[in-house]
Image 1 (cartoon, one colour):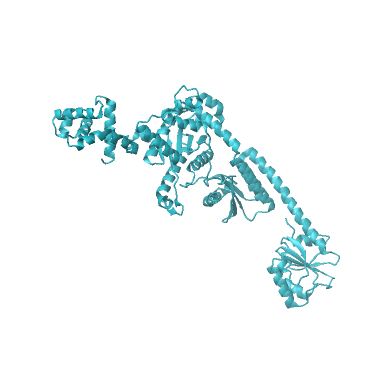
Image 2 (cartoon, rainbow, N blue to C red):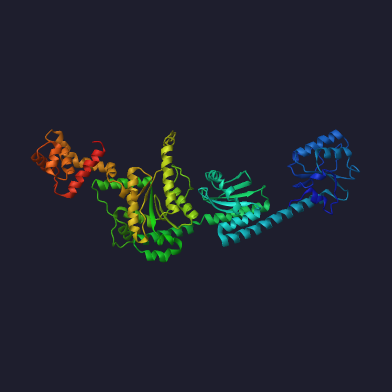
Length: 592
């Protein structure tokens, strides 16, 4: 405890006597200061014991003393010490009455007690209190460290709650309660989600104090620009020095446990990339041998493979796919190549080979707290959503970021897959609701909206990881083409291929294929496009197709020969018939 007027009165060497304010001696004393100024108030900070001999005071004037004492009380002076036997043989009654009237403690200082002795006693008591606080702080730090090493964050919170005589709670980046101590405080901690979210939006490190049933301090945790977690400490009153040391120690320890070092994080990602590479190559036993402890349930139970991609990468892939539709040749790795990248590409399949190679060889950094912001780093947000969901549910998850693409292996039906779906829904909603606001023009032009597309494979076992990757790649491609945030591969099997024909590149291919027939029809020499559509829809049945057109079957046969001559293709080839039918459907979907 800091020194008080009562402790000074009970100090055997000082021999102080109480002349007024006996009921206010428990007030802490910040310092003892001697001043003979008639008005020392401009030099007071509050909390002082003022020591005087009344050299320049008319201490026997009641009105002057009332004004003097009233100003001292207004300045926060906690006590007045009067030197007896120096200028006055006793404390004048006018001063005693004024002190009693204002409730200011008035102490008599005997002539043999120098003011310096009182100042030294106050200083020694303050130093002893600070030493006790520092010692208690170091003891708290040792105890918190011990509990953290033995029981993790839960043990630390329990020890911290005991140190501050209150409660403590740990939150993840989304504002969800991860742990709380004691258990009775769980309800109180749960009410602070909105305050944690506001704290998260401020640059780290950040802190705040909120009221309610308790006085609660909130502190962000993490060394980056955005907080990765938060600590709440609830107490009945403001923290003392020792309690403050304990809280600061807890912040440091929790930061160490929630914000891993860059080298450790990079090492874990390299292990994850190696495990992914083994799974894609069908080497499940090797993957288990390397990382069974890290990703055990992923290597034994059904999982989902999730691919996420940012807008710039999606646009580039869309151009490649468009070139492929137009007839461009895209070269990818094949099985059996000498390089590791080629092996992975061959196992994953030609459609996503280059992407898999980049995903398992390059390792990027994730950042940004949860909470969808369409203008922020959405891949970074998704990483934190995935990691937070896995931590809360105690699930194993494998995350391999690579620049503008992210590969995730998550337990089928688990919290991570659900969190990805919720993130996509929230992002989709934010795009619709906030599109107008995000496009408001500023002096530098319109605000750009970040885009993200996600493909989700069907449930698969470790032996089918390569097939799951290909499924996720296909779902990602469909999400990109349809302008959706997330598509599951199972949707593709249950849906229709026709919506896929709405792509600009597909329509361009269809227009190019059918253009010679339309140019022929434009001369008025026949209706080849309609005849081709009728013949294909009737599976090459001449009589039925001719009846649909209202022409003789010989006329239809002639028109089909003309189609073959103009296109330079044989309608006996099933691939040609398929391409022509899809071209007709694509142009019909475009309203042509």
